[in-house]
Image (cartoon, rainbow, N blue to C red; front, top):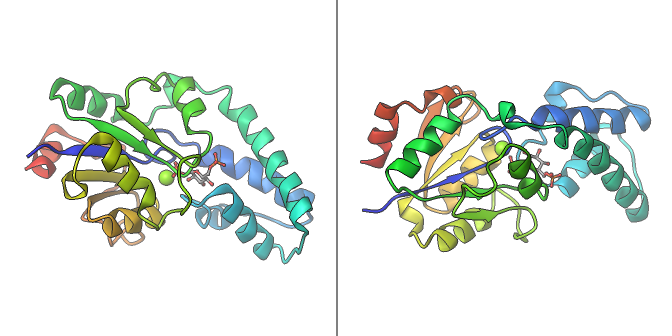
Length: 216
Ligand code: G16
Ligand code: MG
């Protein structure tokens, strides 16, 4: 049967989490509180608006909707300064090889990301035209762990959900894939991602043997 892949962006294709972290930390510091790497874990795979809510809760800060809007723009402006400097060197190890393998074997793949900046990031690293479909934060109304982003991806790939293989680094993303009735591959900590069907500690785990195994 025809299988297709759906890739998360941040943490799977590129490591933009470090740039999100720098921008969120500066925002927190400007509001007068610390923001740690551990705090940042809570924002992985979460939408921009929801991320701000979590951050404000950490700092015990209450703001009006207008003030929140200003901070969201401020955060994204700083984040984009980092994104604009990105190059193909920042594609995570093993991903180019994996995409080449999928192309050679005419296996389709889509992007399924929470980020509204996904097309820009893909353009910066030279991958914008590689995906059959791109579903990002501009296309969805319900954030991960809701399966919407991946179900739209399957539709655009013209592939049944049960024939889709999702690659995700966030627990919310693994949950979304499972809720969509797709095969889930978690990239990262096995304890954190234990709900995934398969877990790889990092993106170098996509060996030919592993890809063959999950395709069969
Ligand atoms: C990414 C990140 C999240 C970020 C979200 C929204 O999701 O993991 O930390 O908050 O996108 O990003 P933006 O502010 O660019 O719209 P994913 O789904 O690619 O991992
Ligand atoms: Mg991610």
